[in-house]
Length: 582
Image (cartoon, rainbow, N blue to C red; front, side, top):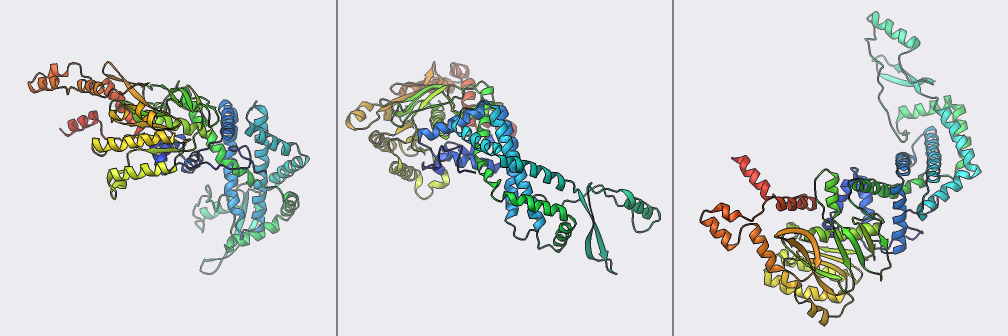
């Protein structure tokens, strides 16, 4: 089988950069892969493909088109799933070939099974691809390859030979053994009495003999032969086992004609290997699991679109109706979540965003959504948006709050600063940088001082960036940064909206509203000076007038759970826990 791939248009493999462990964690890649499939080995396959950021637009479009075909033809997908089971069996069978101690008869049978699966897979792939109007270059290459085999005169002979041999070998259903015992009733010899064309049961003379023995209260005491114990499944019969070695020898002798037929006919196909087909298992698993899941998402009325890919020097990003894919996962799982979608762009004028807004107003949700948008697009699958035109990035770098265990030696600020320095040492102007509440673990003054230097460095670097923060001052006077530091992308202020004191989860390019946000939140939760004074005086009803602890809080908590499944207890959960204790 030629060395072609459904992930790459030619033999050259990716030279793209790999996502760091931190980036995979911050984008919740493991969580997403676990939702796609319950099989750990499939999760690893999918993750290993996704962690390499493919930047070449030609490669991305090649993948996208293959995925598009498999998504639009469910019957083709189902047929390939069936073939995957056969290929998985073939992969197990391959292990037995490496067993040098396997008896010749079993080696021949393994070879017969290999070629039988090869014939079935070639026929199945050819039929499936011929029946569907596929458009992608990748599947057309596969179709042409299997088509050339299928129409070759040699394949017809192989097909007939294998069919005949399988039929002949398939007639053997059981082996009857004879065991000799010594005077202590210990087995000393074993041999084959007969090879049968039916599974062993309790027939004929043996049945009558055992029944007779039972009636005479002799040796047999009514032992049932209803069930048989499996000796082995797929694989070889080791020559190290004396019993199996003897059985193999006798079977070979008794099936002399069949063994001769196997040797003669299989020797014609020494150059054919079905094991090369197993190389396609990971690629098929990647596309099919994603296609299956995206189909579920779309059935829920949630948009997933085919992204348009531009050259790296193109329009950066123009996306309509963007949302965090993890909210779609929660919806598929049955959660009732109102997913707010936003339009989002990266342009030379707005290429580095300092995003501010109220606590739990959707900043982290959007930051992660932008990363997943690029990740999905560059893997070649549909993206969580209504439409998207994307210029690929060379890698995604993230700076989210660190695990407590990783801050022991350096302290939180030291650890954050170290990671930030490392990111600037690796990122380029074609990277995507995502900062989530960075430098929030130190004092406000110290954090703001460092963050201002970081923003100036971001302007010089020119990488597309989302820097979400509670430091509203950081997003003020950005014109000074743009005027005094040269770079290909300018810094802009992005805010998450609030309407009539409630979170709207919509974003806008506008100056920060730090004080007004604080006032809205204070009033919403009843902690303005006037509300607190009313509560102190005992007028609880008046103090709570205008507050809203339910609807918006409940929605925010649902989104928090979706984004961070291991979140801390919410206010409602703490209240319920206290009630239970009482």
